[in-house]
Image (cartoon, rainbow, N blue to C red; front, side, top):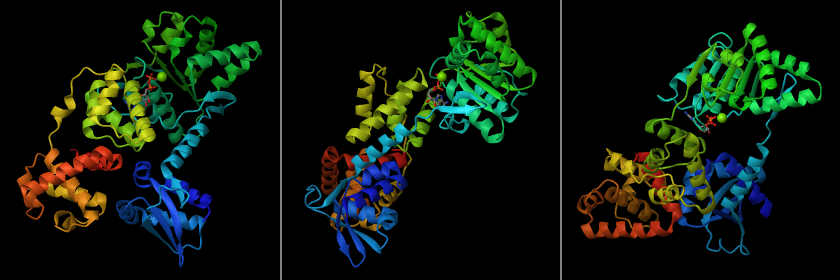
Length: 467
Ligand code: ADP
Ligand code: MG
């Protein structure tokens, strides 16, 4: 098999398998040969072999068939030489994945869109009302946006949202634009920022096309202008907006605005424009409380398919309290850290990072808040499911290698996260004695220090159980 074929297969898998699983299970793959239509792929360990076969056998076969149509089946085998690229066509899947996602990012930056002849910022569909987390700090603003999406132009016109930087104004404005777009397919919507509005205006003055620009703006159904404080002292641009505002308002078309202050406090704006801003509804956004911050963080992590344990998420949400952008900044950093160095977020490394950024007040609320009601049976089931090894084998006495790690993980979690005694764990695991359990727990601890991958998997299980 050509190296390129294997590479294509891996790229295909990166599209179909969840990112986190991909990074966990597809560390390295090699091609070992083909026997009677069975493609044999090499992996690093028996553990990987069993997991891959069990969990992703189907996906891998499908991907292989795309590029090797004559393949009848696939099989994984441990490849002792996998680290030695001259012996096999080894693909470092993680590297491959990173290249792929880098490319994806470059392609994302198309922001111009023609709406009724105006270059407007494309509304980003990652900002939606359905992924905006509602809490006491923003529920009025959210409700107003929802009302506007139901009856644009008549519910609240204009809608003016204000609040400090990083609290979700842009998200709400764009989310509202997206929702109107979905609901009313043929409405023409423009989202722009005040400084872009300003520069459009300035260039139309230079080109002597001001009337045309005004006409175009006035022909749209929904005008969204973000950050109107940037119009401060720009009297001619304000005048232009004032005219557009009047035309739109009189014909019942929706205007949505945001600013960093209430209209009243925008002292550098012309009084008549300010008073227009006050005609409809004015709502503010405040700093989200702990619960809301936690929910936002979890939503952002989920949307990026990144898993953070409850403990770490609570720690971040507790300490990143001034705005949401800060919260996201930390999340971005720990995801980058994981992708570059495969270091999963732990309480220790995250708090060290936040300390370096000057973001902690030294209180760890997360630890004291936990309160687990998981039973040992639920734990063993979760371990069994995760590793694809049946419960009987985990609890039993067989000393096969494949069973050892899952068994040790289960014991370790019972001891360290659920406070079971060694005796009690021994009873659960076929009546082992105290020192056998102690040995297993210690053994796993030392493995976890070296094996980031396994460490990560243990965190996945903990997260599932809220441990
Ligand atoms: P602003 O425009 O007020 O400065 P943004 O809308 O740019 O703030 O918000 C900053 C980041 O925080 C964005 O990525 C946004 O998605 C996120 N964000 C803020 N509030 C929420 C929320 N309630 N739910 C989900 N994400 C939020
Ligand atoms: Mg903004």
